[in-house]
Length: 268
Image 1 (cartoon, rainbow, N blue to C red):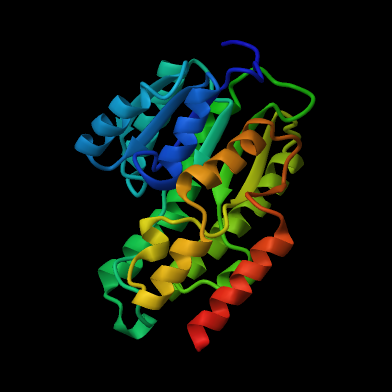
Image 2 (tube, rainbow, N blue to C red; image 1 turned 90 degrees about the vertical axis):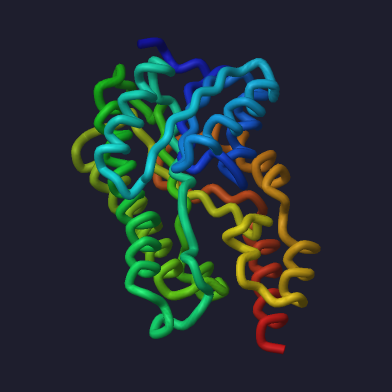
């Protein structure tokens, strides 16, 4: 084990083979961090690690992990400690909006279960696995190890175009973050911070999937690219302080304005 060095951190990112997770890994590697990513496909993990290795002075490792599989998660967390030596930042980015953007009564059992299992149950299992190892690390009087979850506030869910299982599970992730922060404080832990991340509109498959031509054109004009969002979030994640905070890529008024415009486009 080593003391936390704010200049070079050990970072775990789930769902790091593409989209925002990949871009966050790239930003951390550029800043000299040691990074472990995961994905469900051997091919994607190998490809992502190969390209990330030339991103900067940091180190990168990859593991195959299905975040709905408890055994995979246990192995992934153990690999994080084995490869990185310590976990300074754990980012639960892996998620899905489901196979179809459709009303609940038109969704299949498989689609509903997969969405909720990945987003909500996966986050719970990942948080437990991360904490199992973080709690064994040297203690401190203030949070020096930080865990991040990508959830939905009720306001954010209101403006989302995604199906009910996605909105419900991501709202649940936000609740998990709040409850976990309180649980750690009640247990007397002062070393670990838990935070919610709100990246706003990001041009990912999750956002663009199933959109009509007009909506897609608007999103491509107004949403941040993964690289843009990662450049705004990476520093805030790496320099996190305290616990129970909400980390946004952009100021709240700007995010609200974007959501309102998006809602108008949807209804017109």
